Length: 427
Image (cartoon, rainbow, N blue to C red):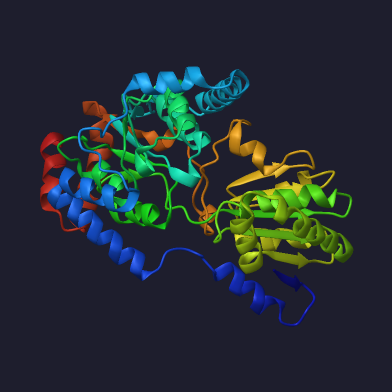
């Protein structure tokens, strides 16, 4: 774990290295993924079968698709309290995303030109759901519900099933969401199958969902063949906290992201050195108790960071440079800091809003930009499953009002057919 003091002479150089550190895939991953994509595109299901058997220890044979009855059975077999928790999460996620639905526009301007836009859902969306150790039903809810709210007609899930075993919580979540298809395939090969299609799996228009470095790289390489939500990297959390916090709370918040992945990053910015020390002690005490302790320890030891500033207001420009996936403002009055935060995937306000509540059932989506992409990207929303089509309807008088200028602009750009298509209508 690294400790930086904003007042130290070498702080800017050290902090710039932190900002520049992406902790993402390397050239070997890129080459491997390109080869997998090419193989799936060329050989379709045969390539999927070979890769699934080699990487997941499972030969799908004729057992590629998980039937809806299995999902219903998994849902009904859940402990009632857990089933209620999933239903509560689904209801809150659905309500939040329904409020995001955009409105069509249709108006006539002063010269009589009709202008507007219509929103429509994509026809089919593919959702990647990690399997094995990182099997998260919450991820399925967060991806599938916005797609359903948007109006997507065909919703396809791909998920690895190591040894042929599907995670029952994922299947139960799929039942809640009304997923149309679930296929036992994962990794970069699953993304390629969704993009290009195979004999069994029809292609989709948009692919969303988290995954490992190979999945993220496959999405990056296939963007343009299909739409994607984002290229996501390792998880991140930035906590800005004063000394009035319980250090055990803040320690748990930091490790809530560190436990995801050894490449995840947890950062604390505080104005109190003694408080930073107490948080560090709490982290050291908590780590041995976690089932995820190995990953969390590796993340904290390699990428963990504490920054001491003279006053918490000094944390804001640092936060904006980091543009972190998750930002907690653990102070009594977070509004002044929140007003100055320009770049963050999601912000958690106050001492009683741990990031984990957003992961499950607060309502906003937990699929968020990482790797400083919050400077230009947003979390997953219904808009990722929709597209906007503009429309124009000109009357003769409206064309007469705009046409001469259009002719001049077309001629200035050296496009005579453009100019003539307007000019002929004017004469």
